[in-house]
Amino acid sequence: MQLRGVFKNKQVVLVTDIFYGDSGKGKVTHRFASEREAEIVVRSGGGINTGARVVADNGIEFKLHLIPVGSIVPRKINFITGQVLFDPAAFQEELKNIQQHGYLLNNKYLNIDRMLPVSLPYHRLQDLSSEIMAGNGKIGTTGRGVGPAVMDFVGRYDSIRLEDLLDKKSLEEKLVNVLRLRQVLINEMFRIGKFSDNVKKAFLFDKGFEIFIDSEGNFDPRKIADALNNDVEIA
Image 1 (cartoon, one colour):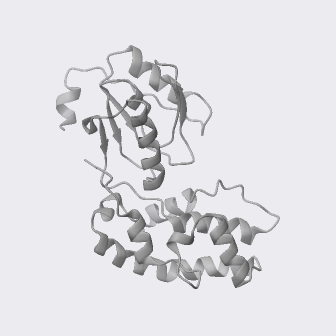
Image 2 (image 1 turned 30 degrees about the horizontal axis):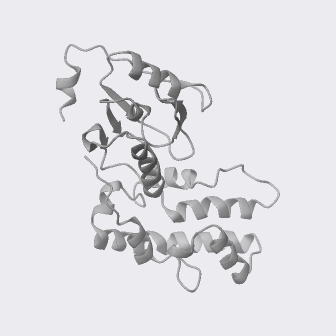
C-alpha cells in the first residue's frame, strides 16, 4: 500500500502524549477513528506492557496492547510499525480475541512491519532475573521483558526482527549466537541471587519457560524457534 496516495489531499490527525500511560490517548484515538473520516490508525511505539482499554460500539470492552484501537472500528486500516516491541504469543492471543467478536476478519485491515523488534522468552527471563539479583532493592519491572528487548533493539546486533521468524533455520542459527552470551548473563544473575540449580529450574517451570529450555535449564535455540515459527501474517 502506498501511503502517499492515501494521504494526498487529506487531513492527518496525530494523537500523541508526553505521559507514560493512563492518560487516555487510546480512547481519544478510538474516538477519532469512530466518529471522523479517519482511514488509518497506527501503533508506533510501546510493547506488551502498554496499551489501551477501549469499548467498541457494541459495548464490548477490549484491552489492546499491540493491535491498534482502530481494529475494533469497521473498515479502518491499521498498522503496527515503528518501534513497537512485538510479542508473537501475545499478538496471537489478542488477535484471536478480536476476531472472536467479529473484527479484523479480513487481513487487509491489519498491516505489520517486518522490521519490528521481537520480544523473546529470554528477554522476559532476564527481566525477572534482574529482580532476583536486586534482592530487596526491587527495580519494579513488569517482568514482560521490555527493558532487555529495548536494549537489544538499540544495540542492533542481538535484535531479532519479525522477518527473522519467517525462516526457521536462519532464526535458529541467529539464536545460537545470541544465546551464547545471554545465557551466561542470566545464569550469573541467578547465581548472584543465590539460586541453586534446583531452585532455578523450579522457578523456570513456575513462570512457564519449560517449553523453551533444555534438561539443564538453559534456553534451547531450536525450542524457541519452534515456538516462534507460527503463521503471523505481515505486510
